[in-house]
Length: 216
Figure 1: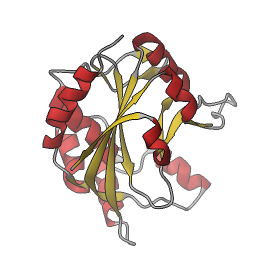
Figure 2 (figure 1 turned 120 degrees about the vertical axis):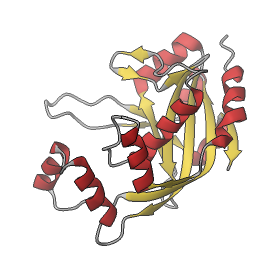
Figure 3 (figure 1 turned 90 degrees about the vertical axis):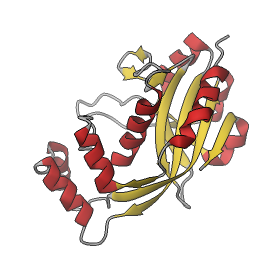
Figure 4 (figure 1 turned 135 degrees about the vertical axis):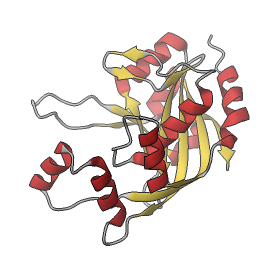
């Protein structure tokens, strides 16, 4: 059986070195200067977390990890790992993980699958959407996706302008754990074909899984 504990020890010994206060403008510019192709993304903070982890562990893990069909995991040591950033919310404790079939194949291959989840307190754009306007201007205008969304509705989500990393959860999943997870159905694509289902974790059930909590 795969010795995933070696991965966990490496993560625990080093992940506390990560900076914990992520200012939106500074992080977007850091991603842009590093030629990270995700700097234009609305959810910049999740991609910033991925970028910092890759920067920190590039000599110990493979980036990316295994690929199953069209799904590629974020990194691999002894097992495959996904990187997730989640906002701490009072009304929702659910975190979307990854493609249901790909995770099942990952566990079938290695015996275990891991998730590194960054829990963050977040701040949102002011009523004038100053950060959103700044980010749009930096990108050179609105994306095709944004224009298509505006054609459907005038409602736009407030962008996160700051994230403070408070806790990291190292989650280990084995085959028997999958039945304890929730399943997220994603509707259909524009061609009418159903979108793949994803597993989802309810943090209220975290004690049912092997987990390692790092307070920051």
